[in-house]
Length: 135
Image 1 (cartoon, rainbow, N blue to C red):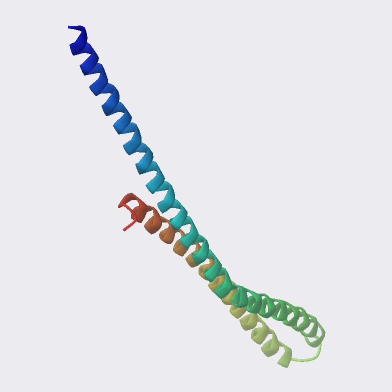
Image 2: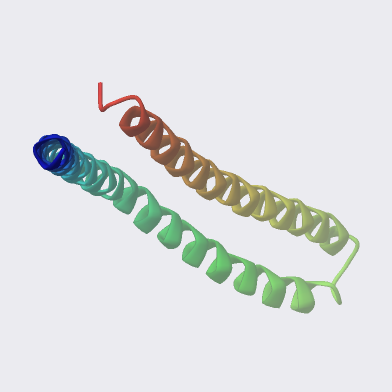
């Protein structure tokens, strides 16, 4: 009877040890895949940053230039209103310029939103790939 218990317990310990080893191997594989995924995501972010930095810098220059232009146009509009009816036409042009600036700002906002969406989608795809076994 004692020998039977010893054999059963030995088999149990062996199976538990084997399960622990399998779990450790699985965790090591998962850690390696996570590291690969993180490195790929970092590379994606670096490439995205490299591509977007010139665009953002150019947009900032354009916005700064537009702001300066708007300030100048507002000053000129104030002075010219007193001269004649031609000022009304100039005022209309300035309004159209402001509308165009708002459209540019809206467009930049959409691009920012699209970037956030793209990063979210990329992260979701990355997580789905990890769930599927990294294939």
